[in-house]
Length: 411
Picture: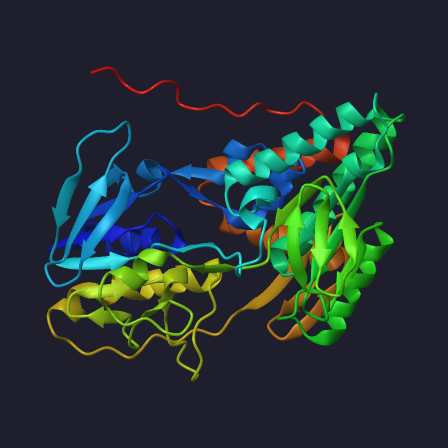
């Protein structure tokens, strides 16, 4: 049995790991690594080396065939995928007995002018490094040309990723400016969202606790205020106010990979691939993760989180051979273990098995849980050492210049 998995995120790779030797698996992904996104904010703040949250796909699923490239066309009827590898090499066509779509999500700009031109995203490792590099470069510049706007950082989106970035960035900027940049204007992190509370999926009392913790860290919070447009001077709000900032980070939401709407299969109103309780979109075609509207077994649609994607992948990997053989299985069902959001300065809030937690104990649970979820003992050890170094040594203010892959290949 040949299985072709398109996408190298949590869900698709968990399908491959669960299938193991039960199928010949081919994985197509634009990146040759799995990004452990829950720790992305700590990379932006310099608490973790970026390599330590990247797991090579060839290490993670050594029995699978891996092809790095972009899926440019998918034919669900024929179960074929056309792939464009890098360096302008010729496209290739792949086919299989079963097709698993795990293409994830992309940032959603909601049609707001200026998002593409004047913001940094917060979706991948390159975004995290760009945020860190820009923050440190602006502190360097502001130490000789003290313009207050240089050290103002607006984060649009008060969901989990935006809140965690705000807390981590506030910590990093406060320590770096106090210790190394005394002549630069004091940095300011501003968090903006149209919602009326931070981390709105948490219960209101926990969201309020998260907001208080951020304010105590010096974060300026604007809730219930929609963004009208963004330009080089900062963020223009729908109520007419202007938030001055030389840096704007867009963390306001995602949408399913737009390729889902182009392959001829039904999608829901949010653009996610419609699948049944067995994660099947069509005969021999399945969807997992952010790109698929997977029923959670309780009457709702599974949220686009890594926690659900991993469970969906395990379910499908275990049952895929039988599903292709026509056997019946109980539909996918999963109830979240809990939700935690880190707030910087050894603080977090959340709920675990329905029990609310906050403060230092929640931060310990956050770190313990995600350290345990990191793939492989090697990365667990490296992140653990990064955390120990962060406790013992001052902030590292060296920024990492980004690099391209060089000129195109010759003829």
